[in-house]
Image (cartoon, rainbow over all chains, first blue to last red; front, side, top):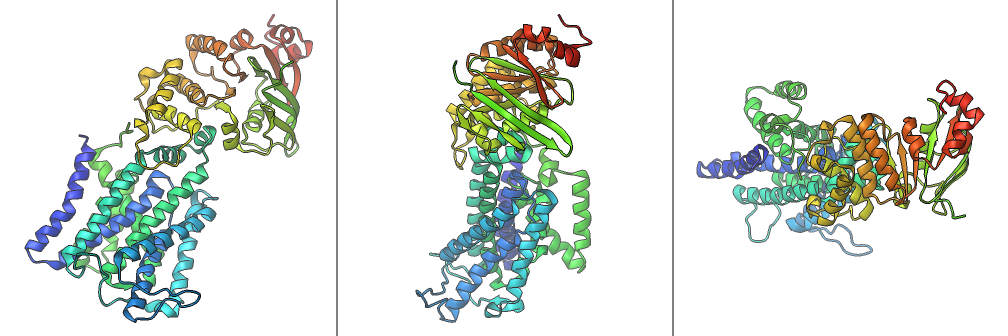
Amino acid sequence: MGRETVLNIVLFAMLPATALIALLLDEPFIITLVTKAAILALAGVGLNIALGLGGLVSLGHAAFFGIGGYAMGILASHAQSYTPLMEVPFLIEGTKSMLIIWGVAITASALAALAIGALSLRTTGVYFIMITLAFGQMLYYFAISWPAYGGEDGLSIYIRNDFPGLNTLDPIQFFAIAFGVLTVVLFMAARIARAPFGLALSAARQNAERVETVGLAPFRLRLVAFVISGAVTGLAGALFADLNRFVSPTMFSWQTSGEIMVFIILGGVGRLFGPVAGAALFILLEHLLGGLSDYWHVYLGLLLLLVVLFARGGMIGTLAGREVAHD
Amino acid sequence: MTDAVLNLSHLHKSFGALKATDDVSLTLMPGEIHALIGPNGAGKSTLIKQIAGGLRSDSGTVEFAGRDVTPLGTVARARAGLGRTFQISSLAMEYTVLQNAVLGALGQEGGVMRFFRPVMKDRALVDRALAALERVGLVDQATKRTADLSHGQRRLLEVAVALTLAPKVFLMDEPMAGLGASGSKRLTGFLDDLRAEAPILLVEHDMDAVFALADRISVLVYGRVIATGTAEEIRRDPMVREAYLGSEDAA
């Protein structure tokens, strides 16, 4: 077993272990923090498919995070006010079912990623960063100026949505849901990385000319990666909204895009568990340093600087060494 | 006369006032090695890009196995059966040697939109990749990172990836460069046999290899083909001697 595998297992076990200890110590707030880390890690796993595997530096993933969040907010707010979403040409009611909400969040963010990706992926490098940022900002201002769903104030959902057989208001049970989703998505991300698609996508990042020469179109590979990536981040957005029982345009802000990217850079770009390590560290710092000073982001910035300058592989890279080419 | 596998007719390409490709027509017949030689700056690289699809021609057509591929890009031309190797190795450097070859096999066999089964456990792809590595003598290096290969080994890997594509035509841009005398000799022998599988359009600076291998040679100077003929004809051609071989006096 390689060092990275051991590290991944430790990181993976750390989340439920912390949650269980918090449960024993009767610290629901800690459980909520761990849940938040798991959900943010999920958003990072989504971005990492585009950024790590595909080399697509998207600064607009808040778009999908927000779409997932608003999918939850809109459906649940209609359900709690007993007003249908629309009646013509056919009736669509709101819902409090988490599973349906996830389905809508994934579909909506995948479609958005398809449209945004189809346009953005015609550019590369800094232009790609800028155009994805622009799309994110478009959605941010759209959400702010959409009075039907709270505008700047956002939407509050009074009761967490339902999951069959579980009491979602119990922190540890909601944690189990979030962690379960993270586990499934991590498993899928690991499979994708090693599948034919992953081989070709990662090759297109390393050398697009090579991929074209063997008769594969980098654009198609990247677009599919972007859609998968957006869908996962959208699912994370729906869970994040459910965690807070609140949705606001902040989910669409470019700071959110930046934070998701920070998880990946802290943890290790392209490493399967990079976003998990990064998000956990981020939440830890936010909790510890945030208690000391409102300006704790200064220290985060310093840490980020150190990682970028001296530890390019992030936490995983520093602890486990260079990634081995898997075969 | 059998039909040409690759048929370039009246290709033009200008960059501003510079005519990089000036009315180039040439053919590649089944089973032959057609060498393209010319001094530096003659427009060989430009012509190769026009053939491979990376650069759009101003006018003229590229026909491939009887089909006009002029409007197609690199990907479609590769799919149509064009196997290209690069002058400066163009490989996925983080990958192992085997992974690069598997990428070629994947391009050839299709099915890239598969998301679940590990590609390196796909027996058909790996076998095809290993067979290609075996042929160029890289099978011992299969698990090595491509970035750790020597320059010459990378050139051989380029050839191996082209082999996995089972192309109808090979387009090889200076495959001998950096191989050294013995490596160059070995590859010469290999290409000699390879022409029976698919014809080769060979751009090469190594004149020993060119004269040993080529059924026909075309000489490109300032974007124009000034002569096409057998090795013997090219050696004797006064224009070629003046423009290109002049100082070498290679007879």
